[in-house]
Image 1: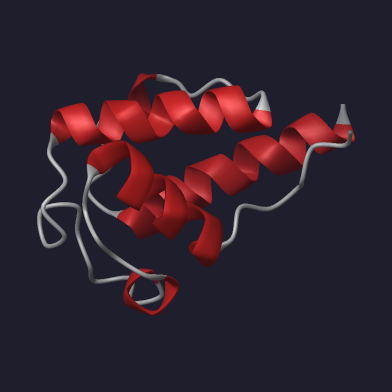
Image 2: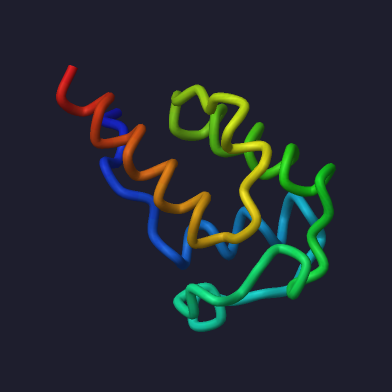
Amino acid sequence: MSIPTVLSHEELADVITRCAGARTDAAALRDSRITFADIEVDSLGVLGILSELEQTFGIRFGSEAEKCASPAELLGIANSLLRSADQS
């Protein structure tokens, strides 16, 4: 099974809903102004999201990802890591 080289808004919305209990969708996440606070995801929720993404995609986030203020920021970090893993 190959690892995807991009995390979509749809996939991130699903992970947020499953792992942080916040109901959101891809359309909401496409707005780069939306923060985790706006969708009621706290720091423990972000850790749960990161853990799920690490297990699913086989990537490792650094401490900067734990401090992400928004889904858009996290999506950017995740996709950068996925692209780097694909090139190795």
